[in-house]
Amino acid sequence: MQRFESDVNVEGESQAAYTRFDSSPSVGQLSGTHLEKQTIIKSTLIASIGSFIFTYGILASAGNNTAILVIFFLSVLMTDRLTVFNPAVSFIDLLMARIGFQEFIFNVIGQVGGSLLGAMVCFFVLQDFTNAPYLDAKIGDNLIGSVEGELFGSMLFMIVLVLQEDDYLKFSDDKLEHALVVTLGFGAARVLTSQGQSLFNPAFAFSLELFECIQDGTWGRFGFLWVFTCTPFMASVVAIMFNSQIYKRFYDKKIQYGF
Image (cartoon, rainbow, N blue to C red; front, side, top):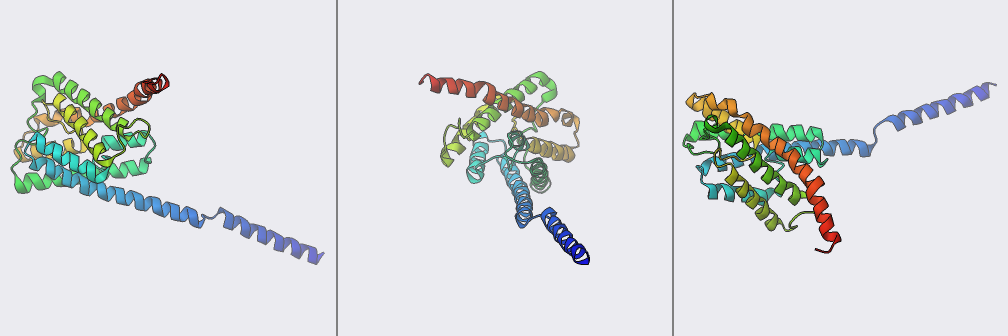
């Protein structure tokens, strides 16, 4: 009887030990979590540094459209993706399940932080950017036109981005051609927003408007900031719907009928 009880105890302890071991996180799970944290930290740092450099470059262009397009082209060429610079593009990646919610939040924090730092350095140290994007926009004089231009421009830019990021529908796989296509889409979209000289980037819009208002003490146009911060996110949703519901179906039919 005692031997039987000891056997049961030994077996029970072995089973308990096995259960404890099985319920604990495996080496693979731990390394996967560590890798995910490293990825998020890396993307946040890249977002901060990239946004700072891009903000500085945009302001240094003094409103010259050619210079802005060159800076934009080089940034796309170096990074392959605009996720690291633009919260609205990060939002597209979130909706399309390319990144998780946590990575999206940290990306946005890095983007806004880098843009704020870049704008602060430019406005308080260099102090010579009177032709910077957003700043000369007299939105209050033509609110409807400004909203329409920003919305249509953002939609055009986001649609080009969504199509070019789709493995099935992209115009080209070549890195140089990809940067050229996205830059042309960006330039064409900016034509539609000549009133506000938009960059279709909520982080840049907030940073540039904030520090310009702090510098000159005029806060009137800050009330219209929603035009530049909200419309790119709305355009992101429209671009995804256009891609999935209209363009992709049309493309499938074109392939089906041999066009």
